[in-house]
Length: 377
Image 1 (spheres, rainbow, N blue to C red):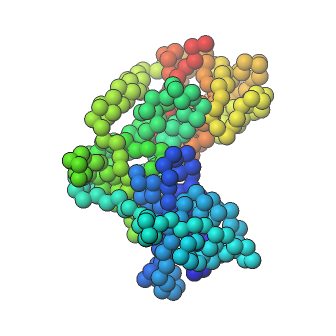
Image 2 (cartoon, helix red, strand yellow):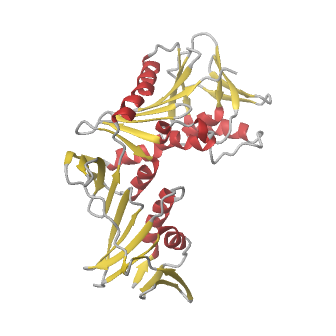
């Protein structure tokens, strides 16, 4: 069977990113029938299936280790590759090269991947692809900051996305409040792996949420996202204790957002990002790709300028835009790495920095608010 590389490669990259740090073994299943081919993957906590059309009717099924198969596919540069299955192996042929991956059996039968299905849905609605991509591209920036934090100091909630009918909330060293409206009330916590898989969706999705009873009497909450080509289902955290616990950080951030700030500074996100990038070049221990460092800088607002000074005495000037309100002169110390990380997700050219309480800065663009704490030392 001949498979076109590009479509499979895009999916392989996304699934591989979702399982890269997963301690649970993930497997993939390749199924071809009725002029369609599906790539299914699961680690038993989530299940995803992506379907493509075929020009010929082929009956084919293979189950192999996800990391091995997806890792190989992501490295293929040819336009197409061929797959064949024997009783023991899946053979992948790329030009004159060939690779064998052992098939996975359950006793004496080829393994069947367990599909996560929701029987008793209590919420059923549509979610636009724009909302999914906003969660993926904006809220994930806050979650990614955990890479630079000592794991012993990370609360479990700081690894999760809180989703309700009013938006999505994530927090680590700061917080991100992504405001939007869903059709129906919902409260759930999503893992980073599930959100990474949102990238597989290219159109709006149908969403279902509910709780099914297990054979042992326990209840299991599930969330399902699907459209004509992609199905994503996951066992999700609906623990009332966790949901109540996250309301503390949410209420605190809402208080910060409601505060009256004496300074309202409007600047170009691009110009501010470029200025911080130049300062980073003088701090050789900084990793610009990951937010794994602290780069403290003094930001001063005075007149028509935002002045950034790092600890080495390097200075950058960024012009403030029309509409800015600066009450006298105000200076604050920020982790410029946090600020730069947020700016990388800004699509709007102009951003607003609300500050003045010596506790936190509100970075606002459209319906998205990021909270950046002022540094005390």
